[in-house]
Image 1: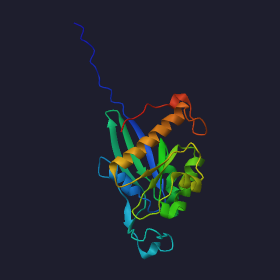
Image 2 (image 1 turned 120 degrees about the vertical axis):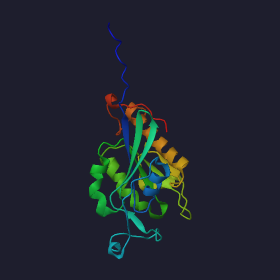
Image 3 (image 1 turned 45 degrees about the vertical axis):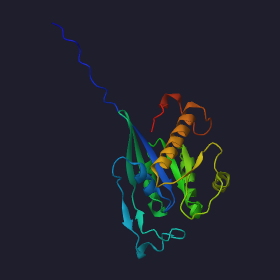
Length: 211
């Protein structure tokens, strides 16, 4: 007797890698921790007198810890889609790790702090140079100066196609909207709705994950 072929569950899993970048003290570790479904992997160390000549604490004088390798978090979108969040270290002396951290990334969030806006220039330049879709999220710190998005865009000399949004890196719903904005931007750039430098071949298109 012939037996019916067994149905095998599709075990394929689509993993999307998102980079969270920005300057020293911009809130990258906080952002990853606010939305990760698992306890975030953090590589923070205490700031000591040895870093005085390297880390400018102007505007973030209360900061006592710093990321020395990366932050890592995970978001399960559904049974077949997962987001991995990789937070980059902000200090220049750790930039040598960026190429490895960003390899294979779908897109990036540049977290900006209006108290130290120039600190995110390097991130913007990096993603433009490597043609990786990114958005800018302005982290609204308590007591920080408030500027219109148009003013921030002008200060950063952003391409008109790069989205910029306000956020609170401490709040899950705010971070969720940042990631939704990034994914929409990535999909638009890949399907041709956002023609230009970010466009990639149709064969690499992905379907929209729902967060």
